[in-house]
Length: 171
Image 1 (cartoon, rainbow, N blue to C red):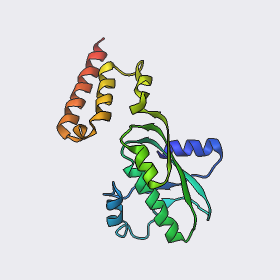
Image 2 (image 1 turned 45 degrees about the vertical axis):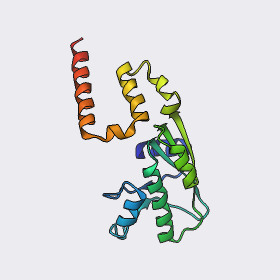
Image 3 (image 1 turned 90 degrees about the vertical axis):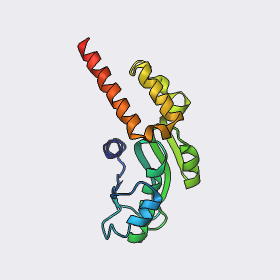
Protein backbone atom coordinates (compact mmCIF):
# COMPACT_ATOMS: atom_id res chain seq x y z
CA UNK A 1 0.00 0.00 0.00
CA UNK A 2 2.86 2.45 0.68
CA UNK A 3 4.05 2.80 -2.95
CA UNK A 4 0.45 3.34 -4.06
CA UNK A 5 -0.15 5.96 -1.35
CA UNK A 6 3.14 7.69 -2.20
CA UNK A 7 2.23 7.89 -5.88
CA UNK A 8 -1.21 9.32 -5.13
CA UNK A 9 0.17 11.80 -2.59
CA UNK A 10 2.80 12.96 -5.08
CA UNK A 11 0.34 13.24 -7.97
CA UNK A 12 -2.25 15.11 -5.89
CA UNK A 13 0.21 17.21 -3.91
CA UNK A 14 -1.13 16.06 -0.56
CA UNK A 15 0.78 14.86 2.51
CA UNK A 16 1.23 11.16 3.13
CA UNK A 17 1.59 9.08 6.26
CA UNK A 18 1.65 5.37 6.93
CA UNK A 19 1.00 2.97 9.75
CA UNK A 20 3.73 0.79 11.15
CA UNK A 21 3.24 -2.94 10.85
CA UNK A 22 3.45 -4.34 14.36
CA UNK A 23 4.63 -7.96 14.64
CA UNK A 24 1.86 -10.44 15.50
CA UNK A 25 -0.95 -7.92 14.88
CA UNK A 26 -3.69 -8.94 12.46
CA UNK A 27 -6.80 -7.82 14.35
CA UNK A 28 -7.99 -5.22 16.85
CA UNK A 29 -7.65 -7.79 19.63
CA UNK A 30 -4.02 -8.41 18.61
CA UNK A 31 -3.35 -4.67 18.54
CA UNK A 32 -4.73 -4.11 22.03
CA UNK A 33 -2.55 -6.98 23.30
CA UNK A 34 0.65 -5.88 21.53
CA UNK A 35 0.52 -2.06 21.53
CA UNK A 36 2.08 -1.66 24.99
CA UNK A 37 4.90 -4.06 24.06
CA UNK A 38 5.61 -1.89 21.02
CA UNK A 39 6.86 0.78 23.39
CA UNK A 40 7.43 4.38 22.43
CA UNK A 41 7.76 3.73 18.70
CA UNK A 42 5.37 5.66 16.47
CA UNK A 43 2.33 3.69 15.38
CA UNK A 44 1.87 6.13 12.49
CA UNK A 45 4.58 8.00 10.59
CA UNK A 46 3.68 11.43 9.30
CA UNK A 47 2.58 14.89 10.39
CA UNK A 48 -0.94 15.64 11.57
CA UNK A 49 -2.82 18.69 12.78
CA UNK A 50 -6.01 18.98 14.79
CA UNK A 51 -9.02 18.77 12.50
CA UNK A 52 -7.28 16.80 9.73
CA UNK A 53 -9.45 14.51 7.62
CA UNK A 54 -7.57 11.53 6.21
CA UNK A 55 -8.23 8.76 3.74
CA UNK A 56 -6.65 5.35 4.19
CA UNK A 57 -5.38 4.04 0.86
CA UNK A 58 -4.51 0.42 0.19
CA UNK A 59 -4.36 -2.03 -2.69
CA UNK A 60 -6.91 -4.57 -1.47
CA UNK A 61 -9.47 -5.27 1.24
CA UNK A 62 -10.71 -8.73 2.10
CA UNK A 63 -12.06 -8.79 5.65
CA UNK A 64 -11.43 -5.16 6.71
CA UNK A 65 -9.36 -6.29 9.72
CA UNK A 66 -6.18 -4.51 8.67
CA UNK A 67 -8.14 -1.33 7.96
CA UNK A 68 -9.67 -1.46 11.46
CA UNK A 69 -6.18 -1.90 12.89
CA UNK A 70 -4.87 1.10 10.91
CA UNK A 71 -7.78 3.26 12.07
CA UNK A 72 -7.15 2.27 15.70
CA UNK A 73 -3.40 2.87 15.31
CA UNK A 74 -4.19 6.38 14.08
CA UNK A 75 -6.49 6.99 17.06
CA UNK A 76 -3.87 5.74 19.53
CA UNK A 77 -1.04 7.71 17.90
CA UNK A 78 -3.06 10.92 17.82
CA UNK A 79 -3.86 10.46 21.54
CA UNK A 80 -0.13 9.95 22.25
CA UNK A 81 0.71 13.14 20.35
CA UNK A 82 -2.16 15.13 21.79
CA UNK A 83 -3.59 15.85 18.33
CA UNK A 84 -7.37 16.11 18.47
CA UNK A 85 -10.17 15.65 15.99
CA UNK A 86 -8.30 13.72 13.29
CA UNK A 87 -10.98 11.91 11.31
CA UNK A 88 -10.72 8.98 8.92
CA UNK A 89 -13.08 10.19 6.21
CA UNK A 90 -12.77 7.16 3.93
CA UNK A 91 -10.95 3.95 3.15
CA UNK A 92 -9.98 3.76 -0.53
CA UNK A 93 -8.81 0.52 -2.15
CA UNK A 94 -8.13 -0.71 -5.66
CA UNK A 95 -9.85 -4.07 -5.13
CA UNK A 96 -12.59 -5.04 -2.68
CA UNK A 97 -12.64 -8.83 -2.48
CA UNK A 98 -16.13 -8.61 -1.07
CA UNK A 99 -16.18 -10.31 2.32
CA UNK A 100 -18.73 -8.14 4.21
CA UNK A 101 -16.34 -5.23 3.85
CA UNK A 102 -18.99 -2.57 3.31
CA UNK A 103 -20.80 -3.65 6.46
CA UNK A 104 -17.57 -3.71 8.48
CA UNK A 105 -16.63 -0.24 7.18
CA UNK A 106 -20.05 1.10 8.12
CA UNK A 107 -19.71 -0.40 11.60
CA UNK A 108 -16.33 1.38 11.90
CA UNK A 109 -18.01 4.62 10.82
CA UNK A 110 -16.10 5.08 7.57
CA UNK A 111 -16.95 5.00 3.88
CA UNK A 112 -15.25 2.29 1.83
CA UNK A 113 -14.71 2.91 -1.89
CA UNK A 114 -13.10 0.51 -4.35
CA UNK A 115 -12.05 0.81 -7.96
CA UNK A 116 -13.24 -2.77 -8.51
CA UNK A 117 -15.40 -5.04 -6.38
CA UNK A 118 -14.90 -8.69 -7.18
CA UNK A 119 -18.21 -9.92 -5.78
CA UNK A 120 -20.20 -7.55 -8.01
CA UNK A 121 -18.89 -8.48 -11.42
CA UNK A 122 -15.36 -7.13 -11.05
CA UNK A 123 -14.04 -10.50 -12.16
CA UNK A 124 -15.32 -9.73 -15.66
CA UNK A 125 -12.41 -7.29 -16.01
CA UNK A 126 -10.05 -10.28 -15.90
CA UNK A 127 -11.55 -12.17 -18.85
CA UNK A 128 -8.76 -11.26 -21.27
CA UNK A 129 -6.03 -11.42 -18.64
CA UNK A 130 -6.69 -14.53 -16.55
CA UNK A 131 -7.67 -18.05 -17.55
CA UNK A 132 -11.16 -19.39 -16.91
CA UNK A 133 -9.62 -21.65 -14.25
CA UNK A 134 -8.10 -18.67 -12.44
CA UNK A 135 -11.34 -16.72 -12.61
CA UNK A 136 -13.20 -19.78 -11.32
CA UNK A 137 -10.82 -20.05 -8.36
CA UNK A 138 -11.27 -16.36 -7.58
CA UNK A 139 -15.05 -16.70 -7.79
CA UNK A 140 -14.92 -19.70 -5.44
CA UNK A 141 -12.54 -17.82 -3.10
CA UNK A 142 -15.03 -14.97 -2.77
CA UNK A 143 -17.84 -17.40 -1.93
CA UNK A 144 -15.82 -19.86 0.18
CA UNK A 145 -13.07 -17.84 1.82
CA UNK A 146 -12.60 -20.27 4.72
CA UNK A 147 -11.77 -23.12 2.34
CA UNK A 148 -8.70 -21.21 1.13
CA UNK A 149 -7.29 -20.80 4.64
CA UNK A 150 -6.18 -24.43 4.48
CA UNK A 151 -2.45 -24.89 3.85
CA UNK A 152 -3.27 -28.01 1.83
CA UNK A 153 -5.62 -26.13 -0.50
CA UNK A 154 -3.10 -23.31 -0.98
CA UNK A 155 -0.32 -25.83 -1.70
CA UNK A 156 -2.53 -27.56 -4.28
CA UNK A 157 -3.28 -24.22 -5.98
CA UNK A 158 0.42 -23.38 -6.02
CA UNK A 159 1.18 -26.73 -7.68
CA UNK A 160 -1.55 -26.15 -10.26
CA UNK A 161 -0.21 -22.67 -11.01
CA UNK A 162 3.35 -23.94 -11.45
CA UNK A 163 2.15 -26.76 -13.72
CA UNK A 164 0.19 -24.26 -15.82
CA UNK A 165 3.18 -21.93 -16.02
CA UNK A 166 5.42 -24.80 -17.17
CA UNK A 167 2.84 -25.86 -19.75
CA UNK A 168 2.60 -22.31 -21.11
CA UNK A 169 6.41 -22.00 -21.28
CA UNK A 170 6.50 -25.06 -23.59
CA UNK A 171 4.17 -23.43 -26.13
